[in-house]
Image: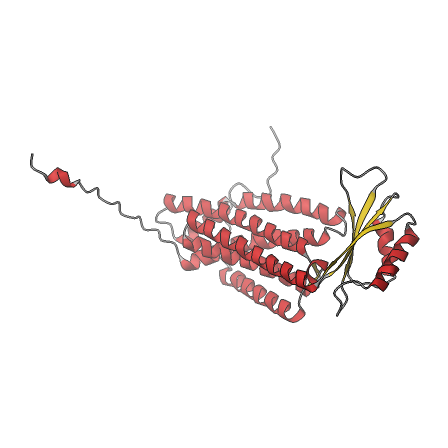
Length: 324
């Protein structure tokens, strides 16, 4: 007999609405607290959003990100990101890295004096290093990136809402949008509270969280729609609990396998992708929670039209009344 791992029993009877108002109230408080954090503390924008300078380095020696970072830490440059660049077209002795330095307060980019210090520090680590290109991002471009990032999240949420509305009913769309707003706002609030670096990779993580969360929500809503047709006299609250229990195994398995992969990435993935992975890790947890305790609560409060629509009687054509 084959061994099958079960994280959830085959049949469960969990009352997800037992603490309905407590969980829903906690979600509202978390959302408002996150907005307050962003307004009071702000976000720790990376080079993408606050401007700065990107330096491309090239050397015949292998790139050692640790040595590069150690050399630049002594200069107290502030926000510095070092990434090794790989490409199949590179030669065996072509080792490329990208050094991104955030602009200091009141400056649009790194000054020429600081650039000379950076080059000298890196040459001390690797005498063969060269600097093929230096690019600066000013505040105007950074402002446009912020606007586009916000627009992308808003349009993605609107598209998801339209899809759910067309596939189900408007109550389901409202619940889905409420859950998505909750997930995005609370995730941004965590980044604001702990002043974690917020750059374009985090925006990509937020868009991925939207997709993950709505996928989980649609699975439950799809089963709920089947149960609405199957159990016509069952109270909506009991039916939603039944639906959540029927899909619980799938929800837990999906979240668990995703979290295992993300945990491995956050431990072994390195500093470059740690912010992105943390956003995804937190987003999967909060997305699963919002599916069970935000989207469903909204639908339960709004109610669902369960009345059968009367069928239209076929009207005979006019020529049927003509005497032969």
